Amino acid sequence: MAEYAHSLIDADPDRPPSEVVLEDVCAAADRLEGVAHRTPVMTNSHLDALTGAGRVYLKCENMQRVGAFKFRGAYNALSRLSDEAKKNGVLTFSSGNHAQAVALAGKLLGIYTVIVMPTDAPEIKKRATRGYQGEGGELVEYDRETISRESLGAELAAERGLTIVPPYDHPDVIAGQGTIALELLEEVGEIDRLYVCVGGGGQASGCGIVCKGLLGDRVEVIGVEPEAADDATWSFETRTLHSVHNPPTIADGARTPSLGRWTFPLLLRHVDRMMTVSDGELVEAMRLVMGRMKMVVEPTGVLALSGLLRDARERADEIAGQKIGVVVSGGNIDLGRLGELIGGSDG
Image (cartoon, rainbow, N blue to C red; front, top):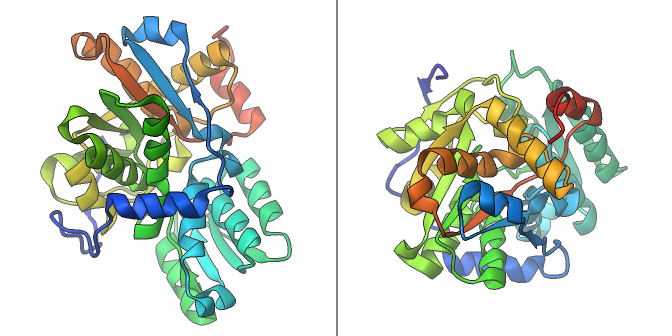
């Protein structure tokens, strides 16, 4: 278990600062039409047999633009800015996938972007971010051991008149991420449960809004986060917001300090259960996906799948015969790091 301190975020567990509803997700889907990829939904008979489910549907956001689901929320949020805000530029802070998403969305919309990234972020994500920005942005690195990305970002934004577009705690970002579940349900129909990854809670909140809005209690939404970064699980179970500093997990995309003012109450309302998985389980899930389905995934990208695999071992009776959705959230991983993580197994 990680060490916690109560977050300084002023979060009301019963109400977000402004509501995010199904209609917001549908509007985001309209904005993303023809811009974001409608990512494939894949199945695998071995995975069905391994879990005992009737059918497992993988929503492959590792095949989204920038290689992760984050493009959905970033583009939706930037496209909603005022003309003045677009002219002045935006700032975000991210370990990688949201950074790339904002950089590309800014390029597509003609908005200058300043990206604050930790020095230890994967090199593949830093290179890609710089590439998407081109001459239309700046990448600022910081030491996450000594500096808060939120405080640094706020300082830079105030100095330069930039609009902050955070990685998850923003209503338009949340609505954009919810289009993942909207597409999945449009393609496969009703499902019995959906597994989603949880870092800051944007994906879980958005997808939960869609599932509960369309299916109500007929679907169970399950959030999955790393054992070493289980602040969201503790927040969920206690209804009191907790935070964690720089948790030691290979799931770099889920090393967020806490849930946010929007995502905390939305997650409480629209997610049925939270669970955690170990780094070892993430590695095994990566081996499974790469070996059996020939897809490149990053550790954070298989959080949801790892949750399903654990439930298949520990709650087999509950999921037997069910239609189950799983979000594969990203595939951005250094190839050298990939060899270190999954070497020594034939998948």
